[in-house]
Image (cartoon, rainbow, N blue to C red; front, side, top):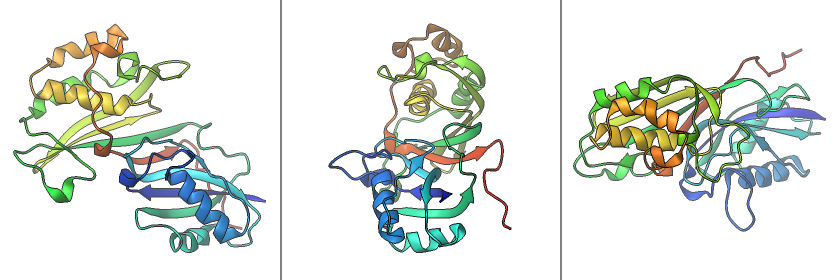
Amino acid sequence: MKRVMLRVAYDGTDYCGWQLQPGVDTVEGVLNQALSTLLGEPVTVVGASRTDSGVHSLGNVAVFDTDTRIPADKICYALNQRLPDDIVVQSSAEVAPDFHPRHCDSTKTYEYRILNREFPLPTERRDSYFYYRRLDLERMREAAAYLVGTHDFASFCAAHSQAETTVRTVYDCQVEKQGDLICIRVIGAGFLYNMVRIIAGTLIEIGSGLKEPQQMPAILDACARSAAGPTAPAHGLTMIGIEFAENPVMAEL
């Protein structure tokens, strides 16, 4: 028995999120089925981040246990032949038997993309949120800077979250623009349910003049969901990747 780690990219448009749910298509469900068929044994993956319906990823991490004799680093090639075009495994590797992607120190990076122009573009509709009102980049950057550090992010957490604590650490929060696309890039040790999407919704309000950048400390201090802006739509959010404090990949003999 060995444990294998996958880095998985996917377009989340047509999936009801990552996590397995009865009667609907999920990324986890598709992976379980494809792996079970490939390896000839029941396989259940464990994901590092259970992204919501419509959210995308360039490198979510999942692990599974298997008795297969296929080399771990070759599994991704065979697996991709059995996956739909909107799910592609970027790499596979053997890891320590006790490695768990949700129970170790890691850094996660998310990006929220906003198409800020007068009319939408069909080619951008799946992975960016169209917003026609002109956004002020400098106001958004000023507000984003207040989020860096360790804070109680209760105001940026969905009301029905079951998190034991709402204190989180954000290492960086940048707002950049290329052409008509504004990208909010957030790096942290971990995130609350809908946290990045609520950050994006709040920064959009600030960028459009509905809130002031200087209100961000008060929004944090309020520790109330009603103090922050709306939850931005899921399809604008992409998990860029996860980096672990210690490399879990086992060295080749």
